[in-house]
Length: 177
Image 1 (cartoon, rainbow, N blue to C red):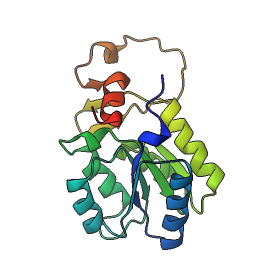
Image 2: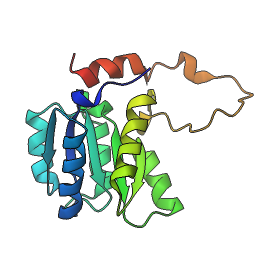
Image 3: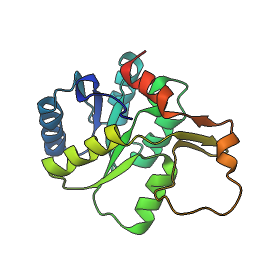
């Protein structure tokens, strides 16, 4: 069950590195994204968020002013469709702690900087073809953090959980319905 088509993409590129932003913009343009905006800092990004219904965000961990994690949390706790937009998070110096912090902030997938065209497209394809349901619990709203299909022996409380936003609903948001 796909999230949507690449031609449906309305992308916000929020990268500190100007060259990487230009390269990412070219990749999304090549992938036939419908709308692409590059924001050089969080103030510009927030202005664009007010006027454009983005459905994908490429965000760098060192995004100016607020930092990538705080900006990610800001996105996730918006009372707007952007709150369920997949976030591809670019990390300059990835390590276990940074990856865990990003996951806990609501990042959908991560990408090591500097990234290649192939790695960006691979992450984009993964986000579109393997969407995760969104979970809202105290202190967290974002994609399900479970990454493996390991057997689970306890009661699965998530099936009855009220804070789950299914992929079918995300697809509607992604398409702008």
